[in-house]
Length: 603
Image 1 (cartoon, one colour):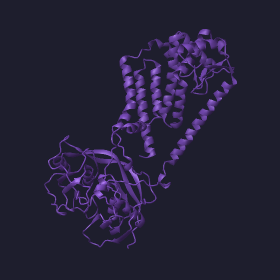
Image 2 (cartoon, rainbow, N blue to C red; image 1 turned 90 degrees about the vertical axis):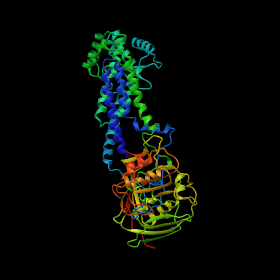
Image 3 (cartoon, helix red, strand yellow; image 1 turned 90 degrees about the horizontal axis):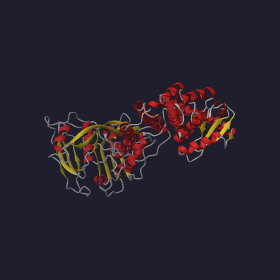
């Protein structure tokens, strides 16, 4: 998944979350404003916390074994290509060209907007900070006495500094860690002691609720997502609800609603509003709606048990759901041995393993035999194999995972005889032990050196089939656990299927190997999800609906009978004979794209 797709996913998830939070505020419109403010704060914070982080956290703490596609080694015998295998791309260096993003103009516009908003916020912050610095600290007098009493009543441990100024600016708390109350000298001349106590309680409530901190956090959201209308909607709702929450506290404690509403209207008429939204004042929010809310304050209802439960349940689910999804494998994880490179490379990798000598010649026209053999003495033999077949074998691909390449990718065929260092591990033993195949590593080097092969990899969300059990723990009549020792050098384990189609003989192969071999017949990547360990023996018979290139319904090969024209489909055969089924799903698939290849010089 690219950076831009992650951003788009995060945006629609955050938008959906904010919409749900906005609808939830309607459910609590008759309750305290603090509840609605908390919902809007959650909507704001969601823009800073992608669900992907919570899902990754769930994956990190999950004790389950990471999901991965196991690998397969099959000696094939087809005319055009080998039986497909899943990708195991080596970790390769990414070039600057590989990281080129076509969306850079969009990124430039976003960055410019973010910088402008941050600069504007910083300028307004400096304006208020300059007013505070120019003011004079007040340590005694009636406002200070009332302020200290209210701090004690509210349970504030850190005293709020009071700074007086001559400007007719609204009273407001500035700062987050060390809050400072900006107090105009004109307040004492315009308001009585009761109104002064109400104003001070309003500001103490802002400090107690940490409103400046939440406002500062949403300023960051505005700067990062300035292009999103719902972010600005959240900003307005945060200001409205925080002022209403403080108004409710004042009316409940010290002021009669009508007198307090008159005081708010008078303050809005006398004072200039501060230029900084993260400075909590007394005149913020819509005046008409705010006065209506103050006068109707008697209608605020306590939170019922049902609403409390719903609020806690929804909040818990919003955090826990993506974590649980990651822990339970909702987003499949790969182990470090299965990491795929998702960016381009300037040249196919040059693994340490290389053939000592290698001969490459064009195949003779009309050659019937085609295949690849890796022999125990370190010899590698490919006869009448196309470049597609060589790449599929070297990189352990399935057909749907290879694209691009020259026009002779399938038409030109080659004979290769090479000698490398002796690998005591048989291909199937290496596969069972999740170890790399030495011959495939050496072939990757040969393709890069002689064919000038260059590739890139893209991850796409494509339809796949998951091979799962159809009958619980019971398997079909045709399948049984294998007793063969597939790690022995003399073992004949594997999957046989020649040019004749409709029959597949499996000797000691794992379920993942069998799943991989089905891909060529069903037209999709097949992933093992049976959770069956060990090897199995069985013969699967079916009638193909459509033949892959190089197979013939009427031709028998490899000692196998031709397809029965009246037989079942491969889907039916898998379910009836093996007790398994192919479940249609969607999942990430890594596709190898050939960007360059040259015909090799014969030698």
